[in-house]
Length: 230
Image 1 (cartoon, rainbow, N blue to C red):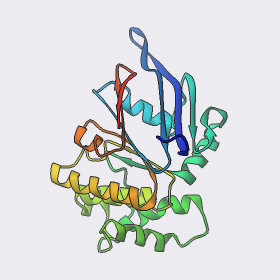
Image 2 (tube, rainbow, N blue to C red):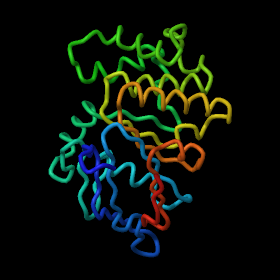
Image 3 (cartoon, helix red, strand yellow):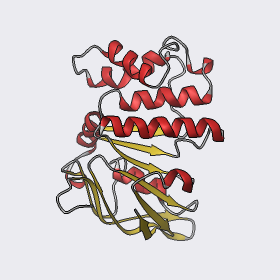
């Protein structure tokens, strides 16, 4: 990262522990990182290494026990839950392994949802149609999730994540429920949209091939950051 690059997301000495049957379990131990605007970062590590926990903390879905996270200039520890939720609605998109589409809504309606929740005064339907066209689903506007393949459902989820022009997009194992061929197509789409929109991409993955497509890689082992490769 060049000294002049704007940092959109940073974590400084972030730690998180939970109480288990055998006492305190340290999930994350003094993890630090920074992500420049428009860049891409992969968080990798074995199962149980703290990847998804770190992603949740970076997105403000949970609070660390110690350390500081700054998202788009906002120190998350200084915001209450309502303010963090408002920040996510305005600045953040999410793509999950299990799609998280609402089964009673069409593809178009699922993509419209974040715009309607934000009530930004724009034409949510038109924006949703454009977003679905961008992921190649302009012929599936009125299909329900049960009528779509896994790859199509994930493309709807990607359209939903990008529809409000987020500054940051968090993806948790975005190809985990897809076969290899469909996963590659979804990955290509994710990175194409990332580059076209200038949205910063932060993803958790166990797929090292996918991780290597990011400009930066953070590896966790036992809750600690052990290496980074650009």
